Image (cartoon, rainbow, N blue to C red; front, top):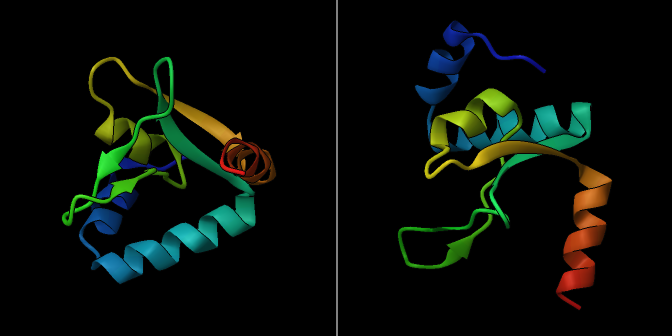
Length: 89
Protein backbone atom coordinates (compact mmCIF):
# COMPACT_ATOMS: atom_id res chain seq x y z
CA UNK A 1 0.00 0.00 0.00
CA UNK A 2 1.30 3.44 -0.86
CA UNK A 3 -0.06 6.57 0.83
CA UNK A 4 0.03 9.93 -0.92
CA UNK A 5 0.26 13.25 0.98
CA UNK A 6 -3.47 14.00 0.58
CA UNK A 7 -4.43 10.60 2.00
CA UNK A 8 -1.98 11.10 4.88
CA UNK A 9 -3.40 14.52 5.72
CA UNK A 10 -7.00 13.26 5.60
CA UNK A 11 -6.22 10.23 7.78
CA UNK A 12 -4.32 12.21 10.42
CA UNK A 13 -7.26 14.63 10.70
CA UNK A 14 -9.68 11.83 11.68
CA UNK A 15 -10.66 11.07 15.28
CA UNK A 16 -8.73 8.27 17.03
CA UNK A 17 -11.45 5.63 16.60
CA UNK A 18 -11.71 6.28 12.85
CA UNK A 19 -7.92 5.98 12.46
CA UNK A 20 -8.04 2.70 14.40
CA UNK A 21 -10.87 1.37 12.20
CA UNK A 22 -8.86 2.31 9.11
CA UNK A 23 -5.79 0.54 10.54
CA UNK A 24 -7.76 -2.68 11.15
CA UNK A 25 -9.32 -2.61 7.67
CA UNK A 26 -6.01 -2.02 5.90
CA UNK A 27 -4.01 -4.63 7.80
CA UNK A 28 -6.81 -7.17 7.32
CA UNK A 29 -6.78 -6.49 3.56
CA UNK A 30 -3.00 -6.40 3.09
CA UNK A 31 -1.98 -8.83 5.88
CA UNK A 32 1.02 -6.70 6.83
CA UNK A 33 1.96 -4.03 9.36
CA UNK A 34 4.81 -1.57 9.69
CA UNK A 35 6.84 -0.82 12.80
CA UNK A 36 10.03 1.08 13.58
CA UNK A 37 13.25 -0.83 14.03
CA UNK A 38 16.88 -0.11 14.94
CA UNK A 39 18.54 -3.01 16.71
CA UNK A 40 15.12 -3.81 18.17
CA UNK A 41 11.52 -2.81 17.74
CA UNK A 42 10.57 0.68 18.88
CA UNK A 43 8.24 0.85 21.86
CA UNK A 44 6.39 3.89 23.16
CA UNK A 45 4.48 5.00 26.23
CA UNK A 46 0.75 5.64 26.28
CA UNK A 47 -0.61 8.67 28.13
CA UNK A 48 -0.98 6.56 31.28
CA UNK A 49 2.61 5.30 31.07
CA UNK A 50 1.74 1.83 29.71
CA UNK A 51 4.33 0.49 27.27
CA UNK A 52 2.88 0.01 23.78
CA UNK A 53 4.16 -1.50 20.54
CA UNK A 54 3.23 1.02 17.85
CA UNK A 55 2.28 -0.36 14.42
CA UNK A 56 1.05 1.33 11.25
CA UNK A 57 -0.82 0.11 8.15
CA UNK A 58 1.68 1.67 5.71
CA UNK A 59 5.33 2.66 5.57
CA UNK A 60 4.55 6.34 5.10
CA UNK A 61 2.70 6.54 8.43
CA UNK A 62 5.56 4.84 10.27
CA UNK A 63 8.12 7.17 8.69
CA UNK A 64 6.29 10.21 10.08
CA UNK A 65 7.05 8.89 13.59
CA UNK A 66 10.62 7.71 12.93
CA UNK A 67 13.24 9.34 15.14
CA UNK A 68 16.84 8.50 16.06
CA UNK A 69 17.56 6.81 12.71
CA UNK A 70 14.86 4.19 13.18
CA UNK A 71 13.75 2.51 9.96
CA UNK A 72 10.22 1.59 8.95
CA UNK A 73 10.12 -2.20 8.68
CA UNK A 74 7.32 -4.36 7.23
CA UNK A 75 6.15 -7.63 8.76
CA UNK A 76 3.47 -10.06 7.66
CA UNK A 77 0.81 -10.26 10.35
CA UNK A 78 1.15 -14.05 10.76
CA UNK A 79 4.93 -13.79 11.15
CA UNK A 80 4.63 -10.98 13.68
CA UNK A 81 2.04 -12.79 15.79
CA UNK A 82 4.02 -16.05 15.89
CA UNK A 83 7.25 -14.23 16.79
CA UNK A 84 5.54 -12.11 19.46
CA UNK A 85 3.81 -15.13 21.04
CA UNK A 86 7.04 -17.14 21.16
CA UNK A 87 8.89 -14.30 22.90
CA UNK A 88 6.16 -13.84 25.49
CA UNK A 89 5.24 -17.43 26.38
